[in-house]
Length: 449
Image (cartoon, rainbow, N blue to C red):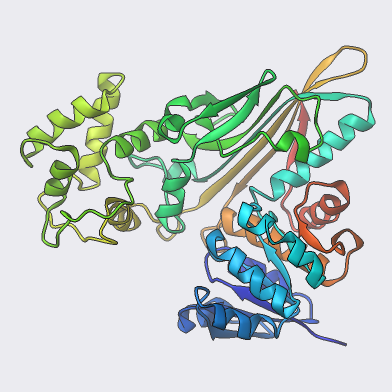
């Protein structure tokens, strides 16, 4: 029996369920690499045929010397490092798996990937990942019956379960807040009734709208990144509306917009940001208030934010107070900028506590026109709650999906034997991943409304 050697880069929350899935096959040996050795050691605790090493993904020499020794590398580090990982994998002729979108930097490497004879499989997490598996399934079924997908909507949220969402942001962070906050600052493009709509980063939160998914939840939705290419990726040229977006609880976008307006999501270095400043002094400087006392700050905040009503004004100012951003307490500075300094504060206030659980909610909605002119609305919905004593819903949905796709690639599944940069946009890749995922208890529920 020849052992398969797998290198996992990163030890974030999704890594453990992925590694656990892969160690279920006795042919696999898994090495987890992290800059901090003790973190990698903690992650593999109790898992068979695993080892931990220290590795710095920002070092090309480190990547080159390690990746070549493995059959496959899973990159679970921030997406900005994927291109460097793939370049080392090209040199070492090692297959690669990521859960991230295919970035332009990764797409550019495709000729070299093909020349090296390797596979770089991406977008095998939750969103992107599970969303593709069920979108492709329904679209193929509709086309097989002679129907047309005229409208396609897909929204996903990684949120605290409702009983754990009682804070000003109606949100909690199970990983670094930075990435999550910046994702709410992306520009977006989508198709609506045949026309492309572009939303600037500055306006993203203001276009959020109430969106019904299922009883018991009050969600708002806003578009995410660029949905336009998915008309082609999903093979629905007939679609007039194509929107992929994010879900948050009602009240979240207005609060994020206030943080933007007040300067807190600015990642630029500030030479005036000095040790010893209080939160109130930082807020005063950021908005140009006349004084750092609470009354002066609130007066400036109301002027800048232009709240739509008194209730929102009261709620958001109370929230800023709850976060300590108007207080005379000394701030702990990070990164010489306001965003990282805020993130440090939010990590303390808005991380999951023992016994709390998260929620993954993903829904596709297809408006379908059949050949007889009849119209139906079809939905696929994943409502997955985390286990306070086990994995979060986010860790499980991303990690297990990644593990399944990796195992299929290791086993030489014919759909994944094509060299190049791949993503699950075709039935032959989606079906086997989805079928195994359902056996693992993660399944979208399909309905005709």
